[in-house]
Amino acid sequence: MNPATTDPDSGPLSDGDRLVTDSRDLRVSVNPRRTRFALTVETDASVTLHVPEGRSEAEAREFVQAHRSWVDAKIALRERTRALNPAKRLVEGEIFRYLGRTYRLAVDPGLSADTPVRLVAGRLVMGEDLLENTSRGKAALVDWYCRVGRGWALGRLQPWAARMAVAEPDLAVRDLGGRWGTYRPDSKGRGTGRMSLGWPLFQLPMPLADYVIAHELAHVRVPGHGADFWRLLGRALPEWKERRAELDELGRRLWMGRIGS
Image (cartoon, rainbow, N blue to C red):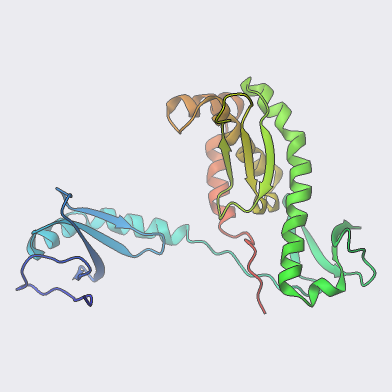
């Protein structure tokens, strides 16, 4: 069925309809198991109206208009926090960040294939062949962030684990699809589980990387994000709210691996 824009004289709303009200174009999602109307503001700031089966357009309009202020506030929040992750070019002088500091990309034609990316005298140095092959160049940069980031993070586990009186988990740094970190307990109960950190994290200043490490370590003791979790994190890191807010703002501006021309 092709999506249709509803009009005041139409019958019950159908799944996939569009409802235009208060200058907003809403996608309609009808679910026979639903008993109430609901609204969802998606990550791209579009709005979905969730509708019980058989409900009319007039009822839907009344619900949307009653929640106009809520929708406006949520859309404004989505716009403020929309990801602005830039693309990077593999060219001499491009800026990359590591633990809050900036480094310009430099080319070394003689760089060994065993260490295709490294920091030298305040420059992030790559072999010339990697700049000419963007897929290999990106892979080498991501691998560098994984390698050096894991080395740095290993040195931060012990002090944070000691503050929360938890055991240090195994540590991996990899692509987490936009997440900063995860913790998975050992399913057999014989180990301390595994913490994974997303490689883009290591572009951030050290205090924000520390926040993510402390956050995931708190999950060694407390699953989920209930009151007990935040109390434990707060004892180790009283300023966690400020660091989380800064992470939300800076994180949306980080390079996430996109290569531009």
